[in-house]
Image (cartoon, rainbow, N blue to C red; front, side, top):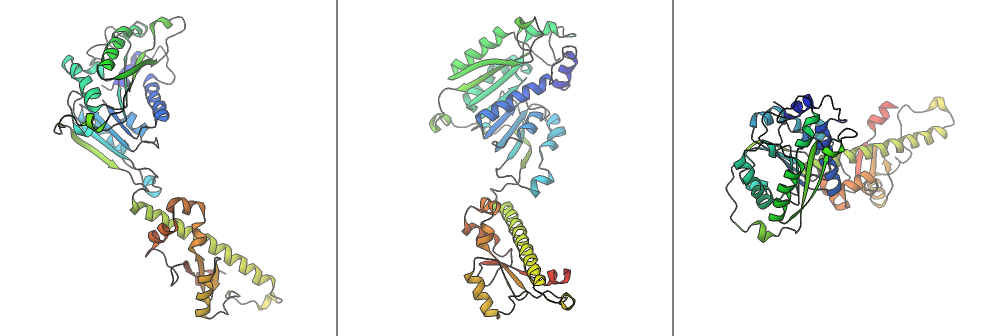
Length: 378
């Protein structure tokens, strides 16, 4: 049974707004906003809801979920797949999401190098033997900069109708505040972490003495991990099984960056071309003494240039030009547009990305368009 659904049954009379599980997830989101971790792992990820929420945090580049129940992850992993909009508008950051099937009592090198590890309503599901191994795996082996552990506060249970022993049938224990804080402080001391305690789910007025419904420990590593300490022992062999992996389209991937840049260059050049032709047409009509004798086919006033002279004008000009039936939009003009400039960074990179993808003048300095379609429309 889903742990959030089971909890809602018991907390239905005491109304938590938002629901308690959402408050826990919001706590993690706020923490991510504060510390900006790039790599985040959620142990006991279950239905992947927290991972789904975290994938929208722009600072995160790697998300990993681990759970002992592969079927629950498989039922919900589609939520973590890229959407069509992710391909149409790739993000600037890279993002890889991976789900693993395995136990938090086992070490696996795929869990090394994370900045933040979350254990939301996890430890109370562990058998005693697993709980004894848990600190060494998370704090000793994984050794992230920050670990967040949440667990039920048993002192709150008498306020929850229907709770006789534990809030969930799979819970092996539920600690009061003294028990949790004693365990957390001992663990923190053993692995050079500092820990602070807080929680979510405020008690009713007049019952503040029972504390939060969910108690939370935030562990922060005291000293930066060095490469020597990280690899003091030979890493164990992989024991987790990968059940899902998604690599999101990103502008850091030149394939996606090129597609976006080419599209933006063509759009910008088309906008400049349309503005230029509208202006020339307006001037042409303004100085035409006899409107009844206007030519049905638009002839730009600069078409008197010969082809060779026209090319010379384009090469020396920084302004968009019309030579015969061809519109030339200098790349320097396009590069000056903020979005193109931001995407490419340098003029040289712009030229590299659009090479062979956009029709350019003979010297490669300008985007070329034929005005025939414009003439037909006019």
